[in-house]
Image 1 (tube, rainbow, N blue to C red):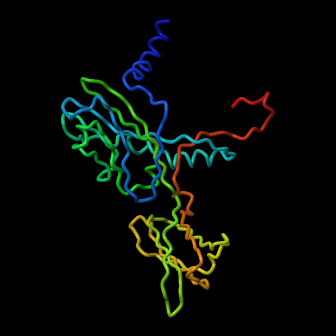
Image 2: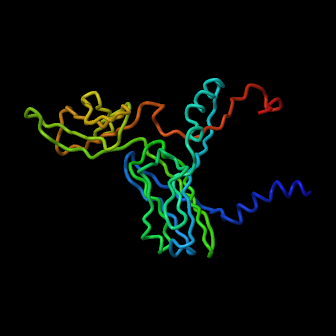
Length: 262
């Protein structure tokens, strides 16, 4: 009995220190947009004696796999915590702490200290990237109490930028420009009838970054009409550069359930 208590005591202590929220709020953001992740506590009224952190954890998702070797390669390739720590923001002793924080968030996350007096520890995340998709955990404590909040951030891997009309060589065309950055952008044009007219469009690189990602401008040379409705849809076509979640291996059943040992 004593050994069992020794095993469960740390877990129970964690629950008492940081109550688990029943519901988790979900936020969606487009690539390279800015977003504020909320975190509010009634016991927080200033920075004196306050310690709080923001951490991240992977979003779990199950997939069926047949090739175990490829599964090992894929998981290893996207094992975020193999290379980077979970801690992305830390505050204690009346100031922000920079040690042992995730370097991928350097210069992109901050907390408005003027709002702490109102109980807000909201994390400002700038220039959201596909790799930022995760569950974010806010933990705080002072002499008046302690608590925990969780929020889920989903980075959308597609956008529908506004379509603009212009004239090129005395011909009316429709144009759209991506707000996000893509390694292999797939641009799809459709008309009011939802017909795919992408073959009439030409896409060019508008701006490129050192990592090979770029923004694009796409021009539709279809017989464009001002009274018609056109939509431009842009998404990442490179599988390795889409948002990636942690993967639980779920092998396909090779035998009858009675022989299943998975």
